[in-house]
Image (cartoon, rainbow, N blue to C red; front, side, top):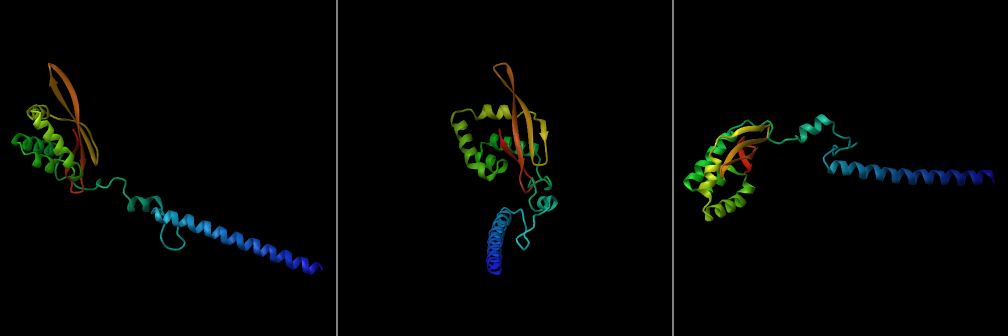
Length: 171
């Protein structure tokens, strides 16, 4: 009789531990697959996590940090002013703004031109810019605008693209 109960007890324990192992393995596997899908773990067994150094190599924090500058913010600013002075809004946005911003900026410039304020904008922007902040991929420059006898400071923000060209992010 004792053998009968010990057989049932052992069978029950084996079943409980087997079910626990299956559920535990499934839980472990799904968590590892989440990390693989996020790019934080290797896609092969045992799905170990990448080290911080490996993650930095796979996913650099700033995509264009190591890109050599081919056009400075000052050069971009000069090209922008030259295109505006010629009245070539297409060239002004093509040379100096990111591709995704070009359509919106052209509409803004056309609106300014239609209101007769383009020459005032050119006068305001055609001044000396002073470096405020220059990082690896972002830069900010200050310039001073005079209106009604008062001086106002303003900023132009630049961002470096993957060809090393600094483009205007905001005026």
